[in-house]
Length: 550
Image (cartoon, rainbow, N blue to C red; front, side):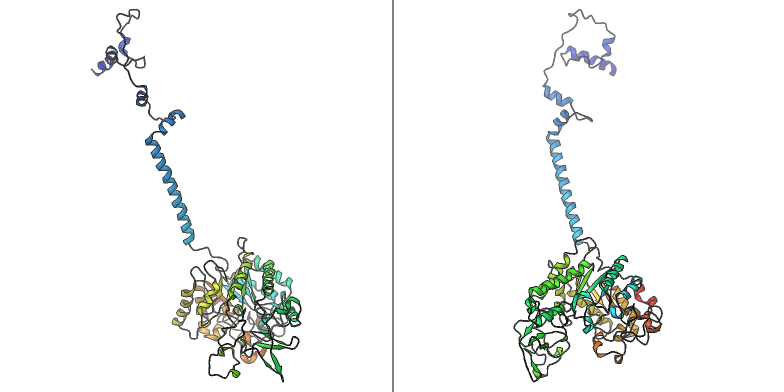
């Protein structure tokens, strides 16, 4: 029945004047009939329905795969497709913006990768006491090179070598006679270059001391200044003073760190020069821009040699007040004439003067010129041992957008008066809670200016302190010999001129004569009597049991 209706449908449309078939629909009914095309009377005339072509085209045309461009454009202009496309476009743009912002936030909030000066302990070496290579009893640069395997075994990547400039060696050589040369006691410039190459070949870094505050009185600048020669006339701080009957009346009551007046009369210039330390170490005049430029040139010289950083020492003494007023007494009732010790005055006019940090920041800027290469960042440390003023110490970190030192060296663990859990907590907390946000801490348990751990707090705490040093957040700083528990030598074995070395004997490498420090007949300081049991190779506190080998 259904089939019959389907066959008759085209005929009915034709008879009723429906849509013309035009042969597109095959009608089987016509197959069974023979139509006489010649007889027009028997066939009814077809009638065409009046239909809107545009409506008909929309009715019949639908999107399909592989449609040509002309057909696609007809659909893309329709509202339903245009609105959808615009929504998808802006969703993609919004997603891209969110992705970029999220990436920036992750980078900004995530901790930075540790730089080389953050990823390893710093091992400080006094070259005269580390290893003698030429049997003269004095340690030297070649001796350091011979013992680099010891540094590598400790898993230490950064070596800090104290002052080895040409010097009369007063106060451990911290008054340089020539900033551009090596003291012959330690070797030659060629020895230094070989040491530097060997250090870098082993993947290690090296930083060195620079004491810009003063020079030796043997320095060429001072000799020219005392003779009032050209630009050097004001390279140092000179003031008129009176000398009568062998007694000098200084310009004020300022006292040197080592005691007695900071002013020394010069027979050549007939004036007094200022020295914050020994009289053989006159202070440079940093209010003279030519002096500042000299220090910048020294920094560039050694950075060009290839060193990886500097530790700037005695920087709080760089500037003094120009008014030269007496500094206030700690004990106001004390007779002013009896003041000879540094601790008897408040040093308001000779330390931490306005402009001092600007000078240090300028040093940082010069070092940044050499830090542009990947992996060649130049480290800058400073001494900030302000025991009574932690805020003043933190200023050496710089400000949020003003870079200064990477960190001031932290001696809180050394300065503890009594060792206890509470005192350690207070020392650590004092630094961490005052350190500016985003800065990096450091901790030292040994220093040239402090007694050794074993002599300061006891042998039983050597490994405890070394382990604490390695577990605190930040960069550990240690001094040669602390890793094996060396002790100070007896005071009677130390000559007066070396009192500031705090009785630290040469490094004890083994149980042989002179502790393996030298093959010569004697060492510049006597080795400790316990060297056969306390040394790198064997002993109760030998390296194999040291915390540094963990």
